[in-house]
Amino acid sequence: MPSANKKNAILQRWEETFAERGDAPAVFAPDGRVLRTFADVENEARSLTANELKMVAPRSVLAIQVGNCASWPALLLAAFRCELIPLPLGRHIEKAERDNALQTCDAAALIESEHDELKLSTIGERQSAIDADFLKLTSGTTAAPRAIRFRAEQLVADCDNICESMGIRSDDVNFGVIPFSHSYGFSNLLTPLLCRGVALVASEDRMPRAILDGLVRSGATVFPGMPVFFEKFGGMENVLALPQLRLCISAGAPLTKRVAERFSEKFALKIHTFYGSSECGGIGYDAGVEFDYEDGFAGQPMNNVHIAPLESGDVSRIEICSDAVGEGYLPTSEPDVLGGGRFIPGDLIRFTKKGMFITGRASDVINVAGRKLNPAEVEAQLSHFSGVKHVVVFGIPSALRNEEAIACVAGEVTANDVLHFARTVLSGWQVPKDVWIVDEIPVSERGKISRRELARRYLEKHDC
Image (cartoon, rainbow, N blue to C red; front, side):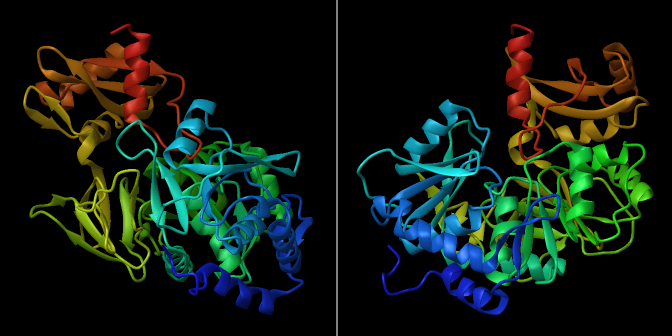
């Protein structure tokens, strides 16, 4: 357990921020209204500490499911002051998934937001034996939820690495439409506000036109987004100019060259690719100013992040070492993957003079009759076919060949045409067994695509 005499690192940094920023705006509405000053955040945190959160025993896990609520910064401060262990939950997760997460993390209470009013529900009279200051929920490579344990100083280290690598300043305004509850939103929006005085816009309207309107009206200067947003923006007509916006960041899913170029042509803004993981925070960042996009580019190592390949050859898994790496997993630890300041993600990385390229994931490799098929290689080839908008390749079980590859394709094409093209550019064993045409490839709230979820839907739809 953390020493009772050791002050939480985020609370320490907040004291400096509050002393410097005082009555300056901290949280804006998308229309530019000031929802909270830094003084308001402090007063709200004191009220929550003295009232609602006083009911929860110290060292208990507090689940927070409030969406992109303006009260988030105060809630986090109050939770730490009450020696609680915050567990952020996405606003839109299914009840069964939420209940599973609450049980896995032994949560004692849940705080929700209804019409901007906070509602606390106790789950049980139990203190936690969890050795952590903070928990991040992740599914990892399995369907079962698990959490990552963090110390507050690790969260601060990630915040500093991000702000210094990206050049985010205290006079910036971060536009917050990505979920605050997820690692990307938490580290790019909440901790910069508390630890470095970077104001944010709290928005839950994910309609592209509304986001663009909010960027203009709020005067936001930094937009941490996802590829799905930049794709929508690039395809819109009669768009507003974004004179205040100086920095666009994309994370959560791969940013394609096509999407990036279309956005930049329309808005004359560079999209900076950000590569990270819940377990360790930021890993790579494209700090360049040139509009020379390439598929799979993950930038260069971020400030104070050390990366080393684990295998010889052009493509390898990597080991990440930094002060931002989490303590370990919950409920079961995997010390060979996470802990002791090091993390080994499942990504396959190719190193070049320009930087890192993500070529796939070790866990996504499809075993076709004993031969290892990297789905990213098939996707790269099929994406060149005219009419293909998006393509994702995944594996399904096969009695004869162990696994078979399936291509899920969005675009104005037919399955037969895609298969015919595949046979001209791929080896026979690499050609997908089937092409599944969809209107749009489904993504999660974070803009991520799950091959596992696509495989489940395919098998269910085709009654396999």
